[in-house]
Length: 215
Image 1 (cartoon, rainbow, N blue to C red):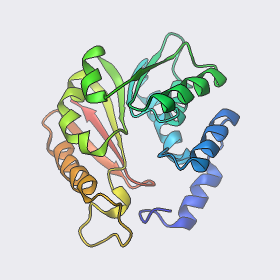
Image 2 (image 1 turned 90 degrees about the vertical axis):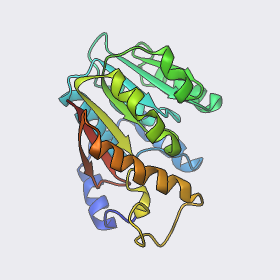
Image 3 (image 1 turned 60 degrees about the vertical axis):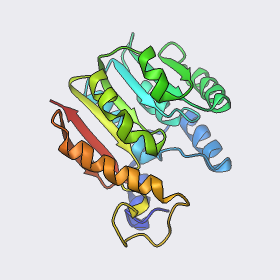
């Protein structure tokens, strides 16, 4: 468990969330079994609400893993809507495609395999919503590219922006093995709050979710 939200509050929020499908539950169990970096169901529900709030028809995701967050978002896209998701690991991308098939979403989701920083030139905007959940050290270097791909009024959602509290000096007792990740995320948080084209708020849910709207 993370240090951001007390465990009792997390259990309460989980008890309210009735949106998870059988396919999502299967993917979540696989994530726990294989120790994969998936969002949890409460963040998934937040993503789903934001896709609906943005009336999104085109979504870009950085960091597919095995497709858990993708299913949460693509599941509420309208007919003809598209989610493009990028994953560096070929085996994880293969599992994600299988999960999309089980969820009946193959017509809505397109998986691009490779380094997202290099693959961004393969996609064209504008996107209504972009979910950044890839390599933490690339959050900052990719920011301006993602902002350019986002339509005015569109949402940039970023996961793990509190990084188990490590972005707060002296707060976290249990630290990730690579301190450069925490430094990269702390710098990124400064970037999204000071970016001239973004207005940002961080929701302290799970590991911290930043919601930025493009002006």
